[in-house]
Image (cartoon, rainbow, N blue to C red; front, side, top):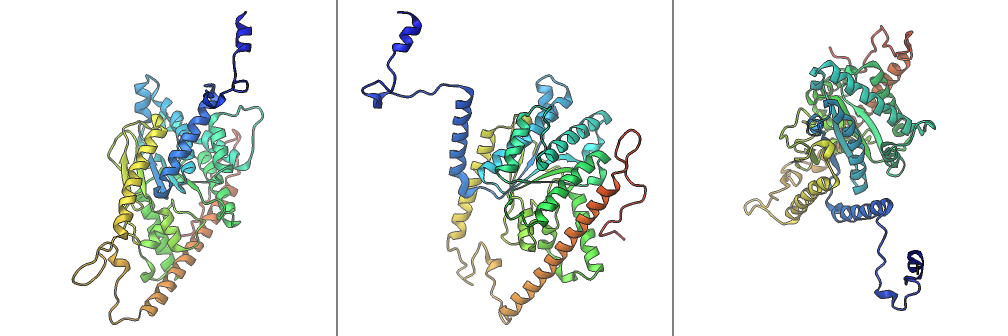
Length: 415
């Protein structure tokens, strides 16, 4: 009997009398391994889902060091890091996380060598073009569909993820800024058409970002609102500042919900550098409403080598801390003298000698004025973006986009 005949005559599950004792061993092909890993990932995310953070931020550090470790050019780590960004965002949204903010390029990075900055801007331009084509549903027949395109399409169509490019975009090259503004303009259409309720997941890509620059711009907005008598000095509080931060979700018109969307629950920095690097300084501080601070996690792996298990370990630590925090909040810990709750006493304050109904009405009026100012500020930003894109259509002989000579009037000019 030949080998082929022996294989043909071998007993199978269908012909075996006691097939319940047989094990159907899967063939270890690429598809079966991918299916098994996806199944394991869904099961692990399901175990942590009840205690997962709402907003996760990443400082993508270690691209150049990863390239040097692999004896590559220093710039070779950045394309790998951009691919890891899309993959990590897919993991987060698969787990059920609603907001993801990533630190892609800092203002301080402009101080690097001209060659490196040019390479990073070229990479940003190519990635923004990829995002814009995916948002518009444009598929180039001549270009092959790579893994990043597939993952990006899954983010947009399966999870309904919205993408925004935030930061001091005026510092970017004209072509890169135009692409970033077009991506934001696409999200503006989604938000204004009331489709934001269906697409609650948001990916913030921070480019040319600085926490100090962000707080300075927010101060200018608040000063402009007071000068135009849209805000009162008593309306300025931590909630308004949080709602005006760049990484807040513009789909929320309510000031409290907008402020809550900007608050970061978990910050992950790769390469084990215990620094914040001027990233989301306000959003990492304690929340005014619940008093919670962001949990900081510093991972040893470089960003291009950041894997699924690294993310699971970080999410597991957060879930453990979150479960303990909820257990403490549910406990009846009160002061024996005054009877006030020791953990959230600020939310259970006894207003002696005051009218609580009057205080609630006053607080409601304050939130309404804040929400109206936020909506006006969003409308001004959308108008400024449209003016920039309209004026940037002029091209020179080389075909490069050119800025207009006349300056664009900002909605909240500084004095």
